[in-house]
Amino acid sequence: MKKSKTNTTNRSEHFEFSKQWIIAKLGILEKRLNCKLYYLADVIDEIVMHYKRDIGKYQAPNHIKHASLITFWIKKLKPISLHKETDIYINEIFALACSAAVLGTHYTAVGLDTNRFVELIHMLRYGFVSPRTLFLIFGLLYVPNNELSVFCLKIRRICEKHSQ
Image 1 (cartoon, one colour):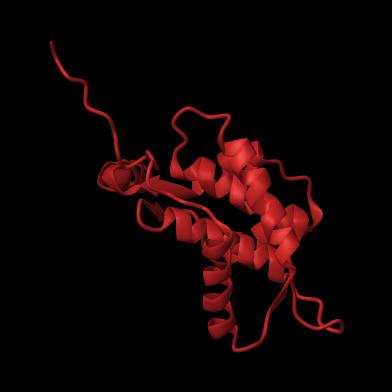
Image 2 (spheres, rainbow, N blue to C red):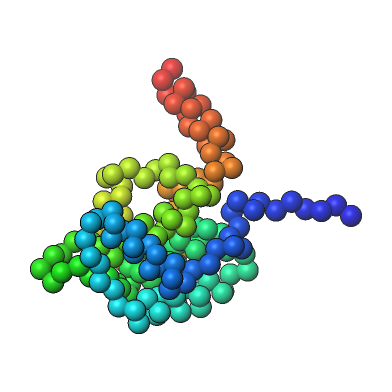
């Protein structure tokens, strides 16, 4: 009997999303922004509850699915605030930072420059964004590390064709 190989790069059996994970990421963001972030613990509990309910619907979710659901629920429930007079996109920035943390070790962002990042922040704040929409967007912006050399080769060939 032949054993089938599975692509473990896209699987995320070892990813554990929890309240502690979110609070740790908040600490990192506080240090980078050099300011105090205030969060609602009950809202973070709700984010984790919705995430776990939704991720449980999938047999073998990949990291993009995890990142999409985390981003969606942070964006929707908005657990963070700075000061009342400050209106920056802190929850949207934090949601994208969390997705980057989930995807960072297994994927490389190939379509995410500063302009696209700002567009994503605005889309998260003002547009209708579902977990499925985020799944599609992250699928376009991130390439699995094990496929990155193939992706680069395809891009190089396309560029060569257009330069001739």
